[in-house]
Length: 134
Image 1 (cartoon, helix red, strand yellow):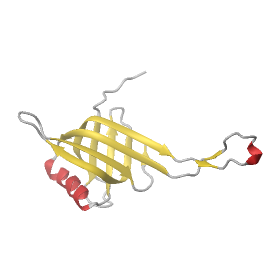
Image 2: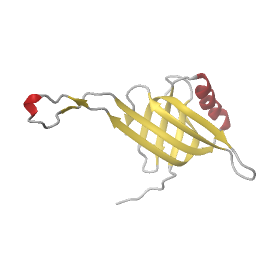
Image 3: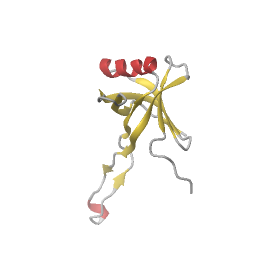
């Protein structure tokens, strides 16, 4: 079974709306992808006290990442989207070539730097519609 580096995630932003062309703006030093599936409890007295669930609740995909800026011009679009609370299209590419593409909201964004070290950022994104996962 193949193993993949934990930092093998690249964040790309769509160059212009509906263009389908993406430019990598950052690489991750750490990341987490979380898929949440809300459950709806439909238990009633006929369930003999066993919980019964309906898989019809809200579904979310959230990404947390720490990384380093790789394309400052395109990264500026990301920073402005965070500042202006704008939803844009992004592509996340993993080390095994899996991708997640779709519209995402930047829930939080932070840029930091230290003496004698690279400027880094931390961001949390959540889906705004159904993402495509390949």
